[in-house]
Amino acid sequence: MTPPLITLEEHWYSTAVLDSFDNSMKEGIKQWPGALERLLDAGELRLREMDKGKVTLQVISHCAADNPSPEVCRAGNDQLANEVRKTEEASKRFAAFAVLPMAHPAAAAAELERTVKEHGFLGALVDHKSRKGYCDGIEYDDLWRKAQELDVPIYLHPSRPEDEIFRQAYAGNYSDRATSVIGGAMWGWHSEVGIHICRLHAAGVFDRFPKLKIIIGHFGEMIPFMLQRIIDQEVIMGQRERPFREVWDENIWITTSGAWSLDPMRCILSNTKIERILYSVDYPFTTNEAGLKWFEELEKSGLVTSEELDFIAYKNAENLLGIKAP
Ligand SMILES: *[C@@H]1O[C@H](CO)[C@@H](O)[C@H](O)[C@H]1NC(C)=O
Image (cartoon, rainbow, N blue to C red; front, side, top):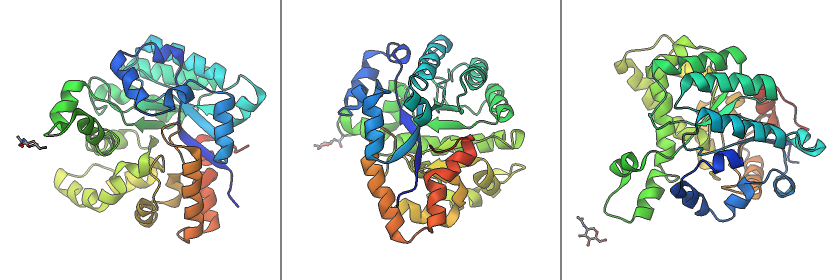
């Protein structure tokens, strides 16, 4: 029998954030059939689709927020707070991660604190790169310090870099469409989040904030497969106080969002602690039913015990976020 499922990378748009987008951003969303309608809904449609995938609780967040200003984030988070407590069912089955103005680290820290304290948000899900790039600079210490102090996780979500940088990195002798796929959901988005974790480690962020909690999706954004290589190469880089193995075991949680194969699980289960692996879907860019089908395959596969399956399904999320599955 399927245990209750909690999911953590489940997207939604406030009108505040959506209205701040330029046209190319809106066109990008339209490439995913049916996504926009679902992104704007936090009501019947979402709940019905959760039921189809046996999702009992969704932690809802904005995604690909495209460098929102502090004001846009504030308005978007206030709208999200209203949605997740709009009805009795909503308040039982929805929780929220904040969107943060990542190009303004001090404002991001303040908004994290405001949303956690005023709205009971469980942490934040952010575009991992702002227009300024990665967040390993010392100015981001404000945000990491605040997250550690509040004891809430930050989910680093893939994001779309500036067109010029994107083209430089990914364009080749193929169509623009191929460029956007290769640099996007096929490879680039994910490898960049993986690199971001290496950069935070190299910059000593996990030494300065040893209790920092970071979540990454898509089966660990390539890191599980590269883990031994990272550990080997870290010796050459010059070790931080806390080795990467320790950071991986203590600071990073990974979700299964949106890639439905058992192959990565075989790797993850052999090098990542069971309490770090959390089920998630990436709604509406994939469906809750597709996730459920994968989950049932995992159950039948014999790769995990039923106790381990419960941890992946909901217990790890309960422990990390301080919530209870309804
Ligand atoms: C680019 O690819 C096309 C075939 O798709 C080929 O005809 C052309 O020579 C290629 N150009 C370069 C610079 O490789």
